[in-house]
Length: 472
Image (cartoon, rainbow, N blue to C red; front, side, top):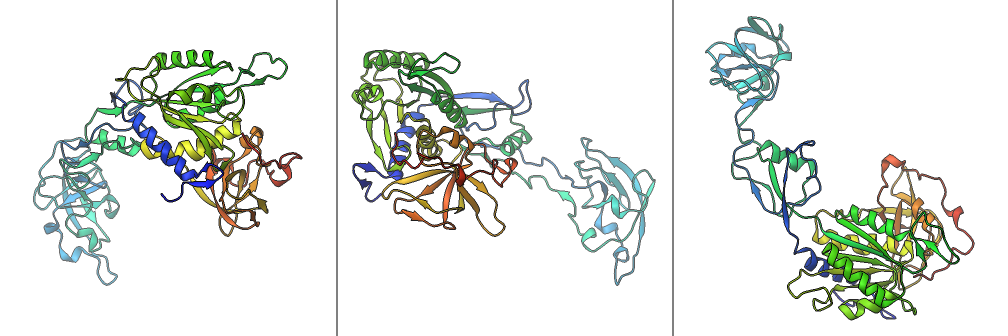
């Protein structure tokens, strides 16, 4: 992996993602399975989209299960078509065949008499003896007559096999139709249903407990006292982790007491049996960093990642010898994030999401785009900086990224307006407008929002004081 440090005790972003990937793989490997029905009381496949298969599934029968018509038309024998019936040298020849019967979709296979045609609907079984289907548009009378006159036929129209869907042409018996640990997309669910499979065993969703911390934090809707703030991280964490495909339980531990925090933390583990715990706040070097104080004694490591915002981080597998844990209990991964809401949100997108996506197909991977900077920017050398930006269309290349406010980690309103996180490399210091960089698209952004930037604001939003480069 090369040098994992950028100096000053900071770990490279890629190295931290790798170690998160390692602990998440350990924790999520213990997930159980459950069987879900494609044909339950709700819409077909409801509840299965986005889940992950527990086992490989193969087809018990071919798909299609029988030769059938690709068109509404007439099933015929190519041997019954005279050569003169084919259009040659610009002149149309035509010929007539009696219509022996009609085959509808879902009907039993029939036999085609020699020298006759059989009116056939899309999906109906090809009658025995027929080897091609001529579309109804190539007939003069259409359906409903005792005979059919074919006109303007090309050589391709009379080629054996024309407009016949052969049995097994899509899926053969014993073909793999779903691999183990594969994401159940709508198309894969449709394929399973088409093959007659009504139940699928899937991995259980990861159980995750998200914890926001801070004695000064209050739940939205409660009255605030002097120096108190509303809890933004609880809603932010829960929504983000649900978007990763997890079952989420949330808690706010409003205490700076290590003893009280430890007791509440243990109670959450006992109540929810999570595979993953994600915390926000309490991990810096201050005097009341309760998460770091408690969990550093329980197997969790704390350090700094060379990114801004979101430098302070914690990670690890909980010590199985800790209280309320037994040696035989499944492993629990802990990801401890900084407490400023923007630092929390950025860390989830730049560090946690890529690590989870590497081990769990249900977690959508980061969406990256090439963008062109809409103005000059500065970035601290040695740090991977992520700037909040709006994306605006160009006629001749990448989207334009226009900064929304400054880099400070408390500017949550600017994050809520942003479309993406512009990624500036550790070697970037002075970046000129027009330079091309990558941006990580934030959840919810897309063409439906208008690709020209939802608010029309950008560089002019930068407020006095937004130029700070510190973070928490």
